[in-house]
Every structure is written in structure tokens, then in C-alpha cells.
Length: 399
Image (cartoon, rainbow, N blue to C red; front, side, top):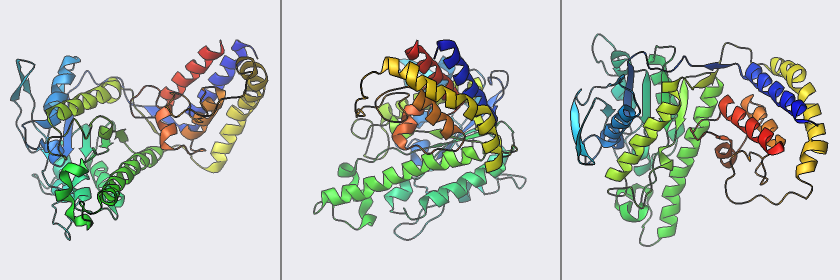
């Protein structure tokens, strides 16, 4: 199969993905208007033990990247605050909505925890809740650490989804977006005294204790990724953030739970880079819920726009392109993550393009490792942009 034919086939697949996914792109980069950002969460958002937490680094990093239109909003903090950074006095917008000790919603049992859900539903004037009153364009939500600390793990994802639904119902702008983040690990060996509600004596069974707590953190973080993906598939204005990936429990924690200054700095830079590469540059896609998503529609589009091209592409590429470049049997999958290797077979080829196409139109499920491999531009989101990058990679490798 010649390169022109392979290019045409892959291009047809891209078009089919666009048609079946009904992807809509957010408007052009948000540089011509004020963008209101609300940091929402518990003590890690509040900035426990230090002033400003990650928020000061977020604001400063966005300024360094050239954004002068950022307005941090929320009922706490002030418009002008400052901190010392690399020998300079840095001024930042310090408004936010972080509450130390709060869980996803009010909980009582092992410990009584106030809830973010109830807090945002309070009256902030004229009968408006917090989201309605401050009207953010972007919300950065990180919550759940206190639920884990108090062993409120049963139903934790359901509570998070209820909170997300409540927030989305109050975000009235068509371009508003809610980022939902994972939570950092806890240094269990250092902070087991805060985890007494698990009912295990750490000194008697450190492995069992650690497995119980770490298992709860891992399960919750995985469920956040899955929940965001489900909501994106329905066209809801939700995006994924992965703070867990940037905070190291051995080097970036102040007390085993809350980040130290280096940890907060990493968080702020992560959020700034994520916003810069997605929302602030208009590089955001979500499925359009107004388009038909029935099996018949998908089947018709797939049959007419995809099957005719991909059948030929798969067959001919297998015999001509792939055979020519992989005359030997494929090696077993390597333990390290390879960008674009969605099938996890150790190579990046047309099979991975087809698999990603099926995932984007909801016809295939991929595990977490495959998801990370699919994230070609490292923005914690898998969408049509990653598909285009993967297609280019395959074309280049087949050249």
C-alpha cells in the first residue's frame, strides 16, 4: 500500500471520528476577555500551613505565560496578595474557595466533616449559591482527601458525582468548564495517626494498614478518571486533572498529607500548563449531546465512513506497510509506557490508530495504561487532537 493511499485511509478515519463523536471545539483562545477561575476544594486548596498554597504559583505562572486577563474568584482571600519567590516579591490575585477539613459533603460517623456541597449551596446574596454568585468560567475542583482520611470510602464516587452535577447545574456559560482532579498520595508511614478510623493497628500490621489506605486512594483516583470520561461522553462540560501525578509523597509533602512549598509549586505550575494547553487556547473538545448517539447512527456512520476505508487500510497495510516494516514477530509488550502504543503490544502502528478511533466513538474500552499511552500531547485528556498526533506518528514511521 503506497503512502498516499495510507494517508487517505487514515484521513478518512479522522473524518469518521469527527462525525461519530460529534466533537465541538471550544471557542478561540480566551485572550480577549477576562477569565474567572475558582480554586475549589479542601485544605490543599486552602493552602494549609502556608499562605496561598498552589494558587499563588498558578496565578504567577499564567502571568509568566503572558496571560493578563485572569481573575481568581471565590468568597475567601483578597484581590491583591503577595509572596516572596526566587528573591522577588510577587503579587497575585488571592480569591478562592478552599476549606480546611472539608469532605465532599457533610459526613458524620468516624469523624464529623463539613461538606463542600453544602458550602456552595449556601446563600451568597440575592438567593444565589456560590457558583452563581461568583460566576466562574473555570473551576479547579480537588476534593476527597478528608473522605479518605476518615475512611468514608463507601459511596465516595457517588458523592463526587452529585457534587459535580450540582456545580455544573450552576455554571451557566456555554463555554464554562469544570476540571476535576485526582488527589495526592498520603505518606501513610508518617501520618498513620490521622488514619485511625481504618481500625487497623499500623505497628502490628503496617502492610495491611498501608494496603487498605493506599487501595482506597488508588480506587478513588481511578474512579475520578472514569467518571470524567463518562460525563465527557455525555457532552458535559467536565475535564480531567491529575494532581496525583505531580506530587511525590516522599519529597513534596509537609506533614504526610499536605504539600510542602515545593509540592504547592508543582501543583500551581501543573494547573497553569494544563489551562494554557487546553481552555485558555481554545484547545478543548467534548462530545455534542445534541447529536444522535444511537447504535443505528453509529453503525451507519461506521459502515459508510469508516468500514470501507479501514477494511482496505487494515488489510493492505498489514500485507504491505506493516509486513515491510515488521518482518519479524512482534516482541512481547515492554513494561515501560510507549506513547501511542494503545494495544500495549510494544509497537505503535495502524492497529493503535484503529483502537483509538474505536475508543473515541465509544466502541472500545481501554485500561488506564492504554489511556496514558493515548494521551499524545500530555494534557491529561484523550481526544481528537491525540488521534491526529498518533496518525502523524504512524504515517511518519511508515514513511
